[in-house]
Every structure is written in C-alpha cells, then in structure tokens.
Length: 153
Image 1: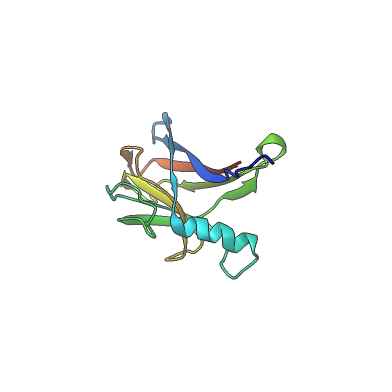
Image 2 (image 1 turned 45 degrees about the vertical axis):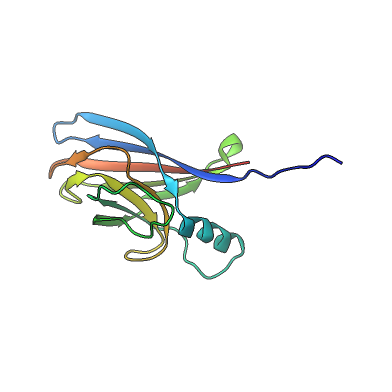
C-alpha cells in the first residue's frame, strides 16, 4: 500500500504600493508569516466556531523580525478595515485577497511592519510582514497593501 502525505500550507504574498503626493508610484512585493494564532483561526473558521472573520489590516513602525508566536505588531501606528476581501476563482480559488488603503494624512510615518486582524483593536492576528524595509509615508501620500493568503497542498 502506498503511503500518502498531506502537505497543506498557508503563506502570504504582499504587494505594497506607495503613491506619493507628486503621483509617483513605488511598489514592493514581499512575503509574510502566518502566525500560530492565524493557523488556529483558520481551523476555527473551518469548524464554524466562534471567532470573528478577518476584517482589518494594521501598519506599524516596529523593527522586530516576524515570529510564529507574534500576536500583535511591535509598534502599531494605524488599523483600518479592509476595502475588499475576496476569494480568487478558477485556478486561484485557493487564495484570499485582502486590500486596505491608508489615504493622505492617515497612518503617516516610517512603516516597517503590517498585519491582518479580526477586530478594530486587539483581536486575533492572522499574519505579519516585517521584512519589507522602510516605507516612508508622508502626509500627502497614500499606501495600499494587497495581501494574498495562498493555501497550497
């Protein structure tokens, strides 16, 4: 009898788009870490248990490398609800795409970390990205995070 091994994983791809007050656009792509509480949240959702669905994205200025034990950003600066949350279709049906934009005058600073949560404050962290360098968001800039969580087997 042939032995089978399941190999299901969750990973994230993050596209960060900074649009300057002058209209110039800078884009950076990076990965994230789906943290332990995020994996537990996925199991909670599959079992139709009690946790609220993911709903917010946060940015911060912390410099600590992401770790599976993370439950919050090191230094949260701003948290906003998603502009959109969609499941891919066809060959991309194994992806969930979250988008949030910090408009001019919101979340200004030297952004070095970001995360997805299921609440406007506190809540369960799904994933954290902290290896994309510094994104300097000035008062006239907008910053958009497009975050894809991809399930592979």
